[in-house]
Length: 417
Ligand SMILES: Cc1cc2nc3c(=O)[nH]c(=O)nc-3n(C[C@H](O)[C@H](O)[C@H](O)COP(=O)(O)OP(=O)(O)OC[C@H]3O[C@@H](n4cnc5c(N)ncnc54)[C@H](O)[C@@H]3O)c2cc1C
Image (cartoon, rainbow, N blue to C red):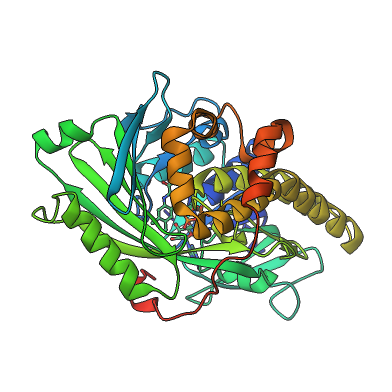
């Protein structure tokens, strides 16, 4: 779909808010700004629906952050979790209450974009944003940002939201700093009815052989999403883990319909979330739960906040007001998602050192299973848990000693661009 970039008198149109990237973060930002009555343009480099390497696990906070009237296109509802420690000590825990839901990203993301469009946002697909400029000849005045597309076209905006994923160009403009990079590898495996029936309503979580790694099987009707995630820099070992995992599950005989890889990145605590009239959210800002690498709820929640604050930045008349609104956005993100990330970081550091202890707790210690259940279903959050439950505080303090492994590179060939 293409948008009109100039008005009838030939003067170039200035959008209130331009959002770059139409994943959950961008669609939420576009929705929030459009619902506030602003002129919003959503730019996406792919044609929709597009594939995204992702388990598609929708936990309570993701469900709660959706626009009103959004019907989740669940492929399955999870009521049981089988935990394993590198294929051993397997135990299944069940819950009468639904723990979380499973969706296919192309369908889910497309539906979110449609909600933003219904709220009034305009969508252009098949356009890659090359860079943004806040000074220089392309920028008519101090209240405007120029968004430069790959074909040389320039789009003007009063505020820009960068939601262009984990290899974000807008994040580079803002100067986002990451302190954790992980490699996720996944296979979508179509299976016969008998196999699908065995997995219905149940996921597998396998604590892996590499520090901080784990694998999963997420059933989606006739297809199983099987994946593993580990620190970047262990590309060959991560690939081997996925192959062994698939073989061990007896799934090696079924041809995957998609095999893909993607990096996830978590922001450093002092990383910026804005620069001038440009905000970043979702993966582009490195907002992701460091232990589980759950990112959809972070994308939806930070996207909504970015859209709301982009509206205020669009209205700001000077640099001081712009700065004030950008700081308010950063404050809102840090007060909620930032707290969850710092608890997640501590959990990951502890999990890297003692995965067996985590496995034993989740499979044999009722409060740990209850915490897992409450967080996935949305009854509580990591932040709330640590704030309100002395036992959780003591457990994390007990586990919280030492640091995680260092990051190195070398896995680029396993990753989609
Ligand atoms: C293997 C794996 C499994 C995961 N499983 C889960 C899970 O089960 N549950 C969960 O909650 N999270 C999961 N995550 C994390 C989750 O996928 C991400 O956190 C989430 O997709 C972030 O959404 P986003 O909108 O920020 O970015 P994205 O979904 O990556 O969207 C970014 C969009 O920007 C577009 N774009 C990029 N560059 C440009 C450009 N220059 N111009 C225009 N458009 C551009 C892209 O095409 C894309 O559509 C997983 C991640 C991985 C790697």
